[in-house]
Amino acid sequence: MKVKCPTCQHDVSWEEKNEYRPFCSKRCQMIDLGDWASEANAIAGKPASETAPQNAMDVEEIEAMLAKQNDSFFTH
Image (cartoon, rainbow, N blue to C red; front, side):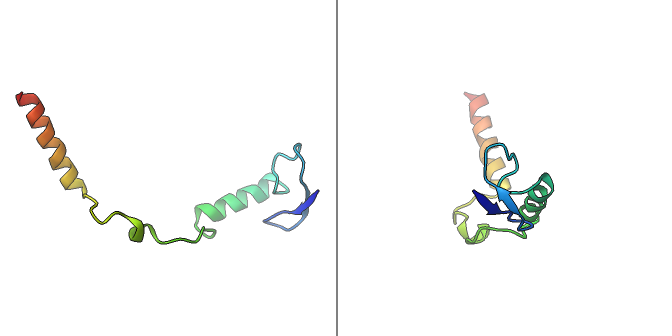
């Protein structure tokens, strides 16, 4: 079966021996990876700030809680 390389649109054989499939080459594979890393490619969804729990603790609250637990651990 032949498919189009997602990066350069060249025909690519979809077979097990093609280690870069669906890409035609390592170069096209790396270009695609770079697009994901730079967020040029993205999966649609809500921004992380909109999906964060409303009762999230900040670092200072977590550190205070841990300090309190450590104090009670060592005093018993």
